[in-house]
Image 1: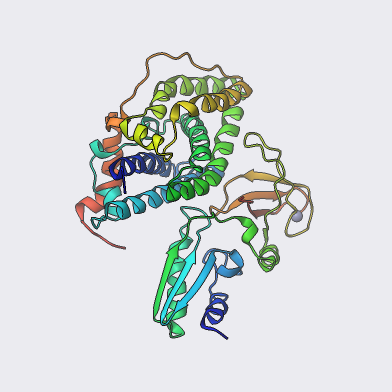
Image 2: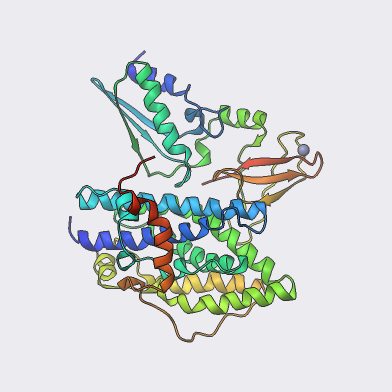
Length: 252
Length: 161
Ligand SMILES: [Zn+2]
């Protein structure tokens, strides 16, 4: 296959973003603000784990070097992870998690909507399946943003601060590199510059409804396309990879 | 009966691990069964990507067929077309309701954001006066409702299209 390396990198980008956010959301397990939300956040986490597994299995198949979904998830260091920076942001309080959810879910929703038309059949099928799940995630996060934003004075102040803080990582969602350019030309990847206005429209409509204010575009953190991360990713991976690193090839 | 027909019948005896009143056939996850000499290939489509039941029912399919002398069985995942609740059989809908789980309703409001909530009748008392408590329930495929009349909480097998 042509451009295999670009395709593998592209799949890593999507799979890593899902895996890292799934791991973050799993940290809410038994720590949710109420039982229903504990279950909701971990259910979303489970969907994302499933999505990353599909891509890691596909990568293993593409590479054909005896890798497995587990070796890909547990065998790489942080400088080999291409997840978007938002996915590794710490959970913070419930409002922080919800706002991070909205920003990522709105991106995933529009991204998977377009990726369904990819000329790569595996990616198109993956997108079709993921879109159904992500639609529920987006409903969940947007309804909570409205509830908190248009809630009490305190909840409004808190989620506005979450939004202002997380906004700095949103440009990173749309970063493209040589792999994208090659794959967009082949009709396999999605041109993210076309996704951005759609994403902004969705986010803006939720923010308005929540009586919040859209932050000004100031300094933006980027770098995930080059696998340059904040200090948080290393800690997250330590936690996630510990068992497989300490007892290589441990099985259930 | 051909070997294929025999296998479809046997698979009706494999329960969904999380909702044991319905079979994996009722659930609509078995897409194709092909027998070539001794080789059996079964294609399945999982409900939700991360559904932990998937690994369980792959093992259950294997052991069910082994018990019935099909020794060479391969279970493959088929991702497209994606599973939809339209594939639940009519039988599944009846059994779900009897079990206390409201079967999926056609969700007419297709708007992604702030869609009007669908009316889900209570599986116990049939009241339409129910409310959504959480979009995510005890498993990935369900959300949590409560009946305003009999006050019982219940699971709703959410619509996935
Ligand atoms: Zn009732």
